[in-house]
Image 1 (cartoon, rainbow, N blue to C red):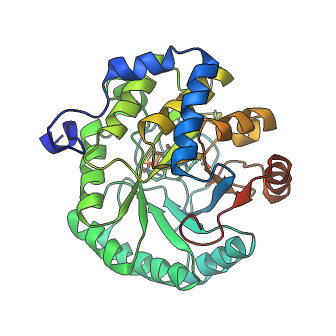
Image 2 (cartoon, rainbow, N blue to C red):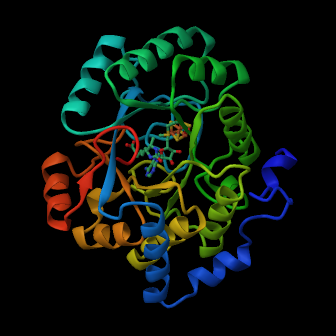
Length: 330
Ligand code: SAM
Ligand code: DTB
Ligand code: SF4
């Protein structure tokens, strides 16, 4: 990994913004103190009653060459998922229009690839341009990029690129062995250099230790510029994957993870991402109080279940939360 990614600060004095000891001190606070601090940081930077809605579409499903232990789309695991080819532009635009009508402001297109092939780029560019023309923010998650691919996507108008660190550098090899943590950081650096906004977060509930969660958040918060968007996923255990029987994270620890993400990356969107179908409304409400201010809407994420619009609209109404209606937090 490059030195510039290891340590940087707003004051450019090479001191990391966050140390593991500081993150640990936050984690160990009494729950009420931690939540109060996270909510105070949240209120200082955002309208606490506003939630950003993103919608996902799997534009290329399954058959992935990588062996991520959590993922139902890896060709290394036997999950019974049928692989598809890259979707046609018309299909993507029709789905994006539906998402916009349902209230999403960002459309996130995901592909089960280790990396895009150069022959796919023209189709991807057309998707970005078409979705943008609908008035939606655009996001893609396609695996590793080359510098040229990153600038092609940026030039097409891609607003965000999602590429998760997923866990700590030390736990990473237990989860994925077909790529390294350094590969992930390199793509994040290329995305940044190309001028796109970075969406990077992780998954909890993969059998990791608390220290791994802290290390992942410290790495994210100490990037030269922290990610604008930080998805916190709760593992969806998928039968046939190596992590199908991972011990679930305790709900209070999940809330603590969200609270730390909010405190350590005060101006980033923190997205309550995968796993909401298994969360109670009360747990989600605690996460919103702790600083989560974005969700994925719709009946499915990429391949797995999501609560769906009826449930989510009722939850937002119950909590007096309104959705961001256009790009930004107006
Ligand atoms: N192939 C690309 C990549 O890995 O970057 C993009 C798609 S991949 C499915 C996007 C992210 O989804 C992963 O980095 C991981 O954080 C999340 N994810 C995948 N399977 C998951 C699961 N079973 N539970 C929770 N999050 C999951
Ligand atoms: C992210 O952090 N979570 C989303 C999005 N970024 C691409 C994906 C969650 C995938 C959950 C499993 C599935 O739907 O297959
Ligand atoms: Fe492939 Fe992404 Fe799934 Fe890993 S997480 S197996 S790279 S689709």
